[in-house]
Length: 400
Image 1 (spheres, one colour):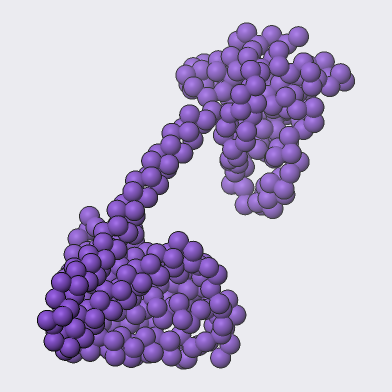
Image 2: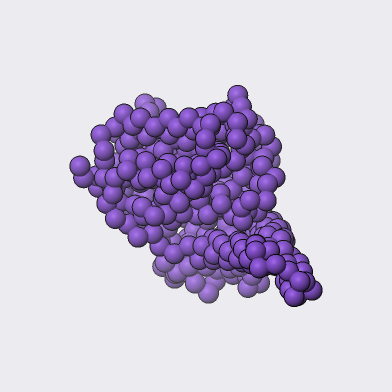
C-alpha cells in the first residue's frame, strides 16, 4: 500500500525550490498532481493528510489492475474515471480549442472550477470545490516523472459549512422578507377595511335621520374603499402568481405612447404641470413582448414620477435605444431623486420612498416581476435630483 505519511511531491526541481514547498505546505487546501495514468501524488501536507483519511475507504472500489489506487478511487470512491475529469469531458475540447491562444512559455492552461458532492467514509455528504489546472503535455513542458508527465494539478476545498451558512442566511433573509410582506399586507388592507367599518357604523347609527344625498355620499366612500381593498388583493395575487407573459409582436413606440396617454388621462391634475419628453430616434420596431404587462410597468413608473413631483413643474423623459440583444427603455424624472441608501430596497414589497398611502406598496415589485418574466432587466439610478429607471427587454426576432 502506498505510504501517505508525508507529502511526496514530484521532482523538487520541477515544483520549485524548498521555499516553494514551504508555501505549498502552508496552504490549508490539499494540492495533488495527477499523471496520465491517473496516479496521484500529494504536493503538500494537507494533501497527504487527506489521502490518509481516504485510503481505507477506497479499498472497496479498487481496480485490481492497478498496483496503487488511482485518483478517482481514493479521492472520490469511484471505480471509473470521474465524468467531470477535464481529461475526458467536454472541458478538454475547450482547452484544445484554446491551445492556439496559450501564451509563449506558459506550462498550464485555464483553471477549471467545479463543485461536487462527495460522501465521506463516515457516510456524510460534503460539498467539495475542485480546481483543476490542465498542464501542457507537449515536449519540454509539464512536470516530468519516471513514468511520464503530470496532466493535472488539482486542489480540493470543503465548502460544506460555508454553503450551510449561506443557505441559513438566505432562509433568515426570506423569513424577514416574508414578515415585512405579511406586515405590509395587514397594514394596506387594514386602512380601507377600517374606513368601511367606520362608515357602516355611522350609517347604522344615523340611517333614519340621514338625508338621501348624505347616504349616497357615504355609499360612494364605501365603494371607493372596497375598490381599494380589491386592488390590493389583485396586486398581491399578481405579485405572488405572475404567470407567463403573453408574447405578441407589437410596436414598442406605440406601447410607450399609449402608456403616456393613459397616465395623463388617469392623473390629469398630477400631470398638469409635467412636460413629457418622448421623441424616439429609432424607427418603429416590432418585437415579441406582453403589451398589457409592459404598459402596466410604464404606467406604474410614470405614476411614481408624477407623485414624486407632487403637482410641481417638472419633466418625465423617455428614451429608446436598440442594443444588440435588447431594447432599452430609459425613464427619467427630476423630482428630487432617491437617497442612495434606499436604492437597494426600491423593488422590495411594500417599500415606499414617497411615504404616501396612495398605492398598494407592490407597484415596483410587480414591475420587477413582470420584467423578469420577460427575461429582461430593470434597475434604477439616482443623481443630481433625478431618478432614472433602465428597462431592458430581449429583442428576439425583430420584424419591421
